[in-house]
Length: 598
Image (cartoon, rainbow, N blue to C red; front, top):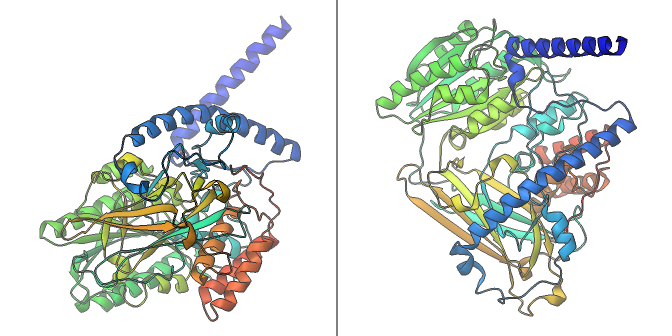
């Protein structure tokens, strides 16, 4: 009887705990986010238990992923592209001897396309980041197509820098490889009125011996005949109480709202005088600060009005601010003007619609009005909201942590930031199974596009501004050279960019092919921009605890970064990268498990 009574007590306590948890969930709508919140393990034993649980979970997910992958491969196999891409470069029917055995292939098929989830290591509260996983290696024989939307965001690198400058390692959820890589100029040549594709490859000091690192670069032209430049820009400014908090290091601290004032001043100074600018501010509720007017006649007055009327106070109603901003933008669009909405915020929505999807549903689908976001501040900061708003509303996402970064983004000519040279830009890489056993895309986990949707123009993709560049990196495991065809021009991959010209709405495709003999013989033989991209990517891979890193202690990446400072002598961005790698190495101590590549 005593045992039964004890059991009833425990059951009642459990129910009470559940009810309390549910009540807390209703009271604090921010906890409804799907963000992966992390907790540091208390002991080595806990780490081993977590890893075992993670392995079991990955195995279970992998079985479902394998069925989906098989169905996709069958669909892709019927695509007429596969016949035209590789038939002239590869011998038909050849089976690479470098492939895995049937047993190994069967084992790996269970989790081939399932993103790797890093070991949980630290809490991200009060900041909100999402773990999108880490792309695995994919067998080329199973799926030779890799398709993704272009991404020119840079926020992740700046956020990581902010953590490191504050004496902390960034949460791995905050690290997105493509944003580390694209923070730096790709060094690509451009043509007038045409996008260009650059493809190069070299062995990497961060990969297995015999593997290649493939770089795919897309460069937007500086001169575009049918680019879309905004006639009107609607600024939506966060004036909640959190914007009164400090930002920056101890040597260079300022209030978040002061940094917004400086950034807006830089933006207005770089716009064409006839560009119309309107301002909406929000805290508990949204309010109009200034109705749209030509900036050339109102720059100084507008800045003074913003500094006077946009003062931190109250809660954060992001949805209300965006809805009010979109109403103003809609009025401008109805007059035949191209409009860009630009949101400055820490993204911590705690009034109104507080989840990304709910906010986006309130705004609706507006192809005629763009939205870009600029994040400010950490602790609290909602990275998920700011990134998803930009990704799903035809814009870009950036983060500023000091006046130097604000100048880097908005100083001088801001045409490349506010204009659009390409809409719905997608890249598809088709790998040759006769030369490539397996491939892995570094980053772009939340920018995946179904292979069958590459030429489906109803599917949203990425936007690229005038003069912007975007880089994607792949690790390739190659077929044993002894088993390949003896021809010296064997294809490694064909890269195709598809995008819409925004003014004419014409669909354009550009392609480039790389062959085995195009690859550099060594990493040192590759160009300095190639090596810079590789170092930035590996730095991100280590920070996000990738299974696939060969350099967890960062000795090699630090050495290569220091070498780059000599190749880019006087380049402050490259020098800063080397400094951050050194800082992260000193605060390291992680040792991720090494995953099998093939």
